[in-house]
Length: 420
Image 1: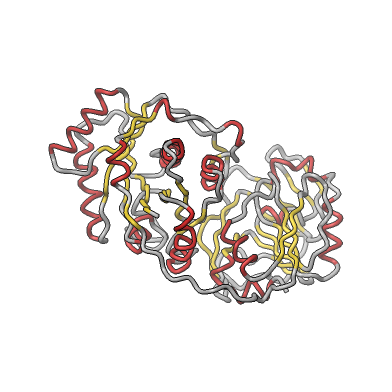
Image 2 (image 1 turned 30 degrees about the horizontal axis):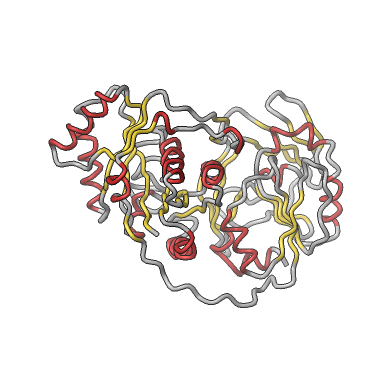
């Protein structure tokens, strides 16, 4: 598989739009693209999957880790010809510093992947030269080459030629493709993009102009690592019930694979549909958008089933929105109060500003991410669920609930213990 990392000059420059446009183009050219996302994002990969029809995996050097990122790429090498990795924020933005852990350039350096840089070219002509020159020079300090540019929000074909000529005159990476200003936009809400409707994915091809040979030449062959043979895992014979629907949709594909590779069988159910928890040994309640479905969830028969499962003492892991289902009530952005499962003594209250954001690490070594707009208003204090930075959550019987989204393979032993 040949890979390239699509980085941006800054957040909002159009990385996701360009990624989807290129994935559509490669798909229509019958080139079998596979998509990946740098960092802990859930929503961009859902859009990738809606275009390609295949799960989009998270990769990075902070939460996933470089070894697991290489393993994921290696496992998919035979299943795709081209791998397009959408970056996070600006190219050099990470957990801290300039181009350090968690950044797009850090992953590109460690994967030896070329970078395709997205530039918001609206209102720009010659200024593209010092901009690209600076990015190229800083990238080279990390051993990374910028193979080409995708110009976004271009005013006309004349504008595109002007940008291309300026770069060529200064021996800078070429324009591989450009999107005009009429390209469809993507709707957003408080946690980022909306969840895609697979039947209503915008067609970007009328707005996309591609230098075909130059674009394909920008990808480089990925050298896979040797994969170990699968063995009977520590969850062999265990069934794990997993909530999955529009309210519980923040599920890393890598986490699903991790549980399956450990031998677990997964039994899916929908709280929105009122389905009971399947007969299972453990329960996982992922995050998502419960606040957008509070009325429907408040009358869901699933809540009583979830409460009964927790009261039975079986292992339960609840992440962010999954934990919001377990309080006394969910208070939506209009101030309406909707009853929830009433397992834990708090209300989850939506607010208009971000409550917490950042990478997290638990004492076991389990890594994850916290990102939410709701806050807990507690009736009484409960034992912390996790010994970690950021939200420490709550414990009750064999339930661990917190605002953290965990990446399971970062601590195999811990996830096995949590679910058994």
